[in-house]
Amino acid sequence: MLWVLLFIAGLVLLLAGVMPLILRGPRLVNSVFTSLGLLAVIVGGGGAILKPRLPGFDIAALPSPQPIVTEPIAVDPQPAETAFPDPAPVAPPAAQPAADPAASKDESQLAPNKMPAPVSVTTTTVVGTETDPLAATPPAGAQQPASPDATAAVPAPQPAPEVPAPPPAPPQPSEAEKLAALADKQSRDETAFIKAVGDARTAYEKAGDDDRVALQSSRAAAICAAVKKPEVNGWVGAIREVERDPGGRTILSVALPDGTLVKTWNNAMSDIEDKTLILAGTPLAAAVGKLAKGDAIRFSGTFFADEPDCYRSSRLSLDQSMTEPSFLFRFTSLEKL
Image (cartoon, rainbow, N blue to C red; front, side, top):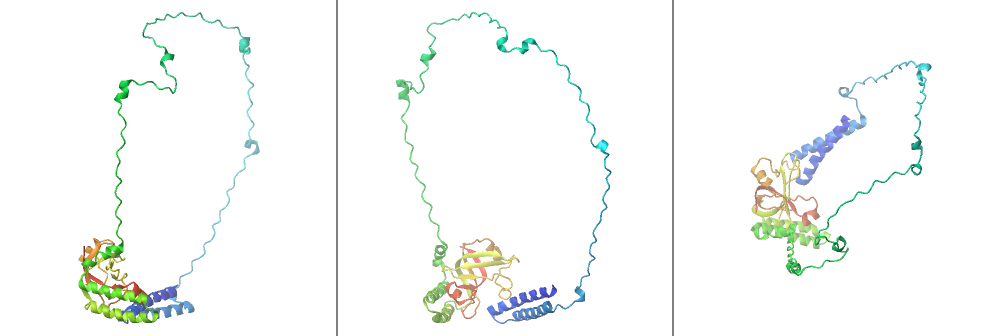
């Protein structure tokens, strides 16, 4: 197990050294990581194959557990005489009383009962106040005639006023439209930079495979002519990505009005030398903490001079670098527009 762990650690160190070596060229740190990773891979791989015994890592064998034997508990059987006791004697039923002769007869055999004498009731009729209930109740479904006064008192129904429909909500602008709205706020060097990148993208999409490599060099010359110094001030864009890494450092990506990205590294390992990640507790981190994705900002910072794109591209392939341009950038200040 130790050799396998050493082999995996060697692969991690080797990868940490080779990737920055490919991206930024030979550096002392990259060489150290590559050498240590290669040595750990060789030693771990050889140990996993040969499996040499290391006395310091031997683990004493533990005694195997012994099974626990339990003795059965003896249970005295119950005598057959007491297992099922004899049932108690049942008492004979009590003598029933003599039945009533009248109760044995049905209703047709009983003597008829005498009806009570009728009671006379005196009623008083008041002339002029009695109404015939049959005549006063109209038949079901019949309409009673309405009086003229009642008809005149009920106003005619008025039609309900028409409520105008609410106006439709205006369509929300797309991300491309929001970025295009920032074009009139660009500085002169930002406008020239965007033009150089956009012209190269259009020419690259129309060119054949043999001519595309040459277009990268011509774009680099146009970018260097547009932005003569790596430091830029007062550029405008919109937040494309803002998040934090496990160490609390802020990862930031900003889209320029044409969609070109300027961004920090997204991990601390790649950012050891460039220092693009925004450290927690700094004024710049506090300013970024008030922003959200899509917010328009004005910012300043520094590109990294590098070939073959004049300034270092964060894309690994030529096709991505020309059609989806993205440049490494160290932000120094920003504010929301």
